[in-house]
Image (cartoon, rainbow over all chains, first blue to last red; front, side, top):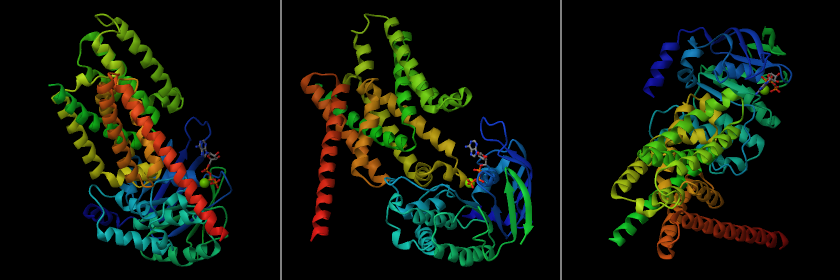
Length: 240
Length: 279
Ligand SMILES: Nc1ncnc2c1ncn2[C@@H]1O[C@H](COP(=O)(O)OP(=O)(O)OP(=O)(O)O)[C@@H](O)[C@H]1O
Ligand SMILES: [Mg+2]
């Protein structure tokens, strides 16, 4: 906990949560880049929406920011840190909700354990304490999945699984939250409550959110930037 | 004298079997089964080479196993083939090498006790030193699992997401693989090189039918692995058959019994539900 705390203080002065400078990312063995010459600055404490058709490079962009995909050219900075050097440390302040989150029905993990992994990933040693479990249940309540805490995660519906993964992202109390199509399996009511309440509250409390979506149908109530991508390039950045 | 040997063997067998069951489940979850399989045969080839050169079989076997664990990933990247293809190719090469080393080794080939020990295992190999090393490995293994359980379970659930959260996935994967290699090399002495993989695989396949949680699966596969070894060693002692074969037959029997029992239970549950719906 202490180390996390010190680390956060250091970053307080940074103006940008994410900076991409002339970034191009290739998938292994591909001749063409999946994203090309990306220049993007996301200010701290904002909510940005990344939109574009299938294959535009939205997922690639998120994974490049996190350093899961290494850019062949250019530089990626998160809270001022070069991701080529300090990725593992920076990732501890980030949460990621992947686009494909579905698990097999025989997956031997309970919902509460999956959410608790979000905290365990940041710990050096040892077990989770009472306070940690309180956070886990709080996160589950936030996404309306508290009653499913003891169920195996593979035996939930797609939308329920997506909400569990969102709870795992939230329980980490990230400073940067990357959401890849977070509404793809959710019903209208859940989409509304997340985009009208949860996301604004998060940004209010100091989190920077980058959210990927095909279109603007579910534009959250607060939205600072809209980044439009097409065939691997950013074609428009609009301040909303 | 005989009874001390038998007692030592049973204790060693139980520990080695438990470790194999446990590591088999973990490697299976990490989709590393083929790597573990290849490592087992690397250890076999290494042991055969040690016969030829008169080296310590444990060290040679371990070097082969760990070397395999480390090069497989990069090898499949460089040659641009899948990990499975790379594993299976190496597996074949190791088997070929095993026979070449055995044939070339000094003394009457295939009939000597040493060669038999490597191929189908022997309880004569179980010395007090062996037992102590085995106990040490299991303490290390349990401690690693206990201390790093949060991160390890996160990797077992979804390695890519764990990596996105800042977990050093490579480090933990290799740690677990190297431990698996050590376990394989030690168990090889009891089961023989060709059957050690069965002890990695069968208990974990059985535990999937019994347990719902990962912790439960690890626990049951350890117990089943330990029981299979104990049964096998007793059987081999009484019937004077190769110990490795007896262990695998023991494991397979437990697997068959569990499969039948769980399918009966499942069909009962369905019948029960049917009645409820009907009334
Ligand atoms: N594993 C991969 N190997 C090779 N090329 C890939 C891989 N994944 C994606 N691509 C390519 O990279 C480009 C961008 O893909 P990406 O997944 O980032 O699109 P996306 O905008 O997230 O699409 P969607 O809306 O369907 O999620 C596409 O042209 C795709 O074909
Ligand atoms: Mg995508």
